[in-house]
Length: 293
Image 1 (cartoon, rainbow, N blue to C red):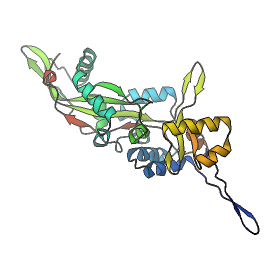
Image 2 (image 1 turned 60 degrees about the vertical axis):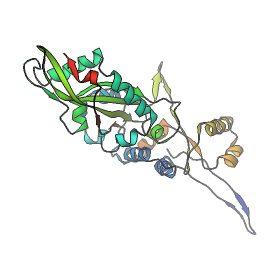
Image 3 (image 1 turned 90 degrees about the horizontal axis):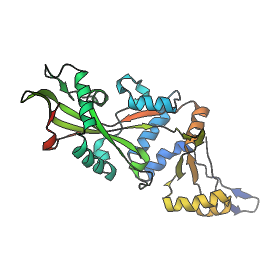
Image 4 (image 1 turned 90 degrees about the vertical axis):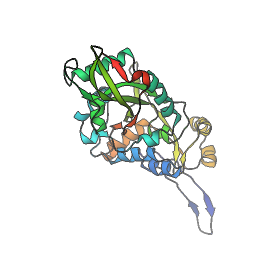
C-alpha cells in the first residue's frame, strides 16, 4: 500500500494558489533508514523488496522454516550474507546475550542436543566424531548448534539493531570432536560459535481468532519518530487532528505490517525470509572444554 500523508501549503500569487503535496511510500523506508545513519536495517528491508515473486509466511511456514533445516530452504527463502556479528556485537542485546550464553550453554538440554548431533554423524562411543568443521553457517546451524537464547525487547531504543533484528535468536554452535576420557565418552570443545537466526517477515499475530496489527513506527523520508514523538503523533492521528499533523509532523505517516502485505498484493513482489548471520568463534569457558557424555 502507498500510505500517504500530504503536506499542503498555500502560496498566494496573482492568478492561483499553489498546493504542494509530499508523498511517502513504504519502499522509501530503506532510504529513510540510511538517512538516519542505519546500516543493516536498510539492507534487510531492501532485500525483502527485491524478492520476486512475492512470498509471505503464515504461522506454520514461519515456525517450520525457523526451526527446520536451513539447508533445505530455497535460496530466496534464506539470507546468510547480510547480517554480520561484527556489526551485531556493537549492541548491548548481543553483547549481554553472548555473555549469558557463553556461561550457560552447557545445560542438560544443551548436552542432550550435543549427543543428538554426534549420533547423527556416527557412534561417538566407538569412533572420533567431529562437529563444527563446516564453513557454511547453514550447515553449522543444522549439524553443530547446541543451545540458544532470546534477545531484544519491544521497549528497546529505536536504532539500527531495533530496525534490523529487534527480537532475535542468538545461537551457539560447537567445534570439536568426541573421544574417551577416563574410560568415559566425552566431547572436547575447541571453540564455540555465536550467530543470529531470525525471520524477516510482516506476519501479524493472531490471538483468539483476531488479527493484531503490528505497528512499525511513524516514518517519513527523513526517518522514524522517537517513541515520545510517536505518542504525540498518534494522539493527534487517532483524534483526526489533521491540521496538527500537517503543522508538526509534515510528511510523516504510521506504518503497519499490513501495509507491506498490501504492497505484495499490488506489486506481486516482496518476500519474507530467514536471516542467518555469520559466526563469531571464541574460546569456551574452562569448565566447558570437556563435556562428559
